[in-house]
Image (tube, rainbow, N blue to C red; front, side):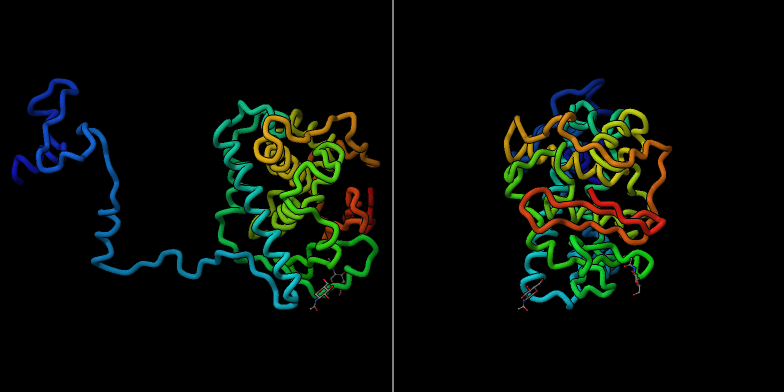
Length: 313
Ligand SMILES: *[C@@H]1O[C@H](CO)[C@@H](O)[C@H](O)[C@H]1NC(C)=O
Ligand SMILES: *[C@@H]1O[C@H](CO)[C@@H](O)[C@H](O)[C@H]1NC(C)=O
C-alpha cells in the first residue's frame, strides 16, 4: 500500500514518527477531516461491504407495532393506538432518566434502592424498542369479564397468555398522559393504572413476550413498593408497580411539572387491606382484573388472587 494512504488511514504514523501522540499528519486532500489519527469515524462502509455478497435481513418478520385485534371498532382501535403510543413515551422517558442519572437519581433510589440500573432501564426499553409480536390487544370481551362491575380490562391468563382484553370502561376511565399531575393526581395516593399509559405497561408486562415471566406483582401498593426498594431491590426492579410508579414520577418531575412533579407523600398512600409482607411471591393469578370506576376520581382497583378471590381497593 502507498505510504500516503497508510498515513491518511492513521495506521502507522505513531510508529514512524511519533514516540507519543504528536500532531497528526496534514491531509491536504481532505482538509475537512477531523484531526487526530486515533479518532475513528464510522461511516457504515464495513456494513455496506457485506451487501456486496448477500442480502441478510436478519430482522425479517419483525413486528414494530403492538397488534390490535380486529374486534376493536374504529374508535376503540384509535384510542388504543394512542394509549400504546403514550405507553412508549412514558417508558422511553423512564429509560432515559435512568440512563442520564443512574442510581444517583433520588427517584431511582426511592423505587429501586441499590439495584443495578440496567434491569429497569431494560424493561422500559423493551416496551419501546422490543419486538412487538407475541402480544395481542382485543376488544371483544371474549371471556365475559367486561360485564363485571368496574372491570376495565384483563389479561386472558390461562385462556391465552399473550392476549389482553380492553373493556369499554378503559376508554372513559383512564387518563391521557398529557394530563399528568391533573385531576388531583399524585403518585403516592392514586392507582398506578390511573393513566392509560401506565395501565398499558402493566398489561404488557403480564404477557410473557414482554414480561418474560419475570416482571410480576412482588408487592402490592405504594407503601409495599417503597419497602421493596429497601428490603429487596432485586425484586423492586421487576415489580410491576415499582416500574409504573417510577415511570409516572419521573415523567411528572422531568416533563409535566419540571422540578416539582406530583409525587405526593407516603402519608397519603392508601394502606393496603392485606399487607403481604411475606417473601416475594409473584401472584400467578390467571385473571388479573384491572378495573376502574366510571367516576373521574381515582379508578378503583381490583385484583384476583390465585384462590379466585377478587379484592378491590
Ligand atoms: C365502539 O365501541 C364502543 C365501546 O367500546 C362503543 O361505545 C361505540 O359505540 C362503538 N363504535 C361503533 C362505531 O360501533
Ligand atoms: C377463561 O375462559 C373461561 C371460559 O370462558 C372463563 O370462565 C374464565 O373466566 C376465563 N379466564 C379468564 C382469565 O378470563
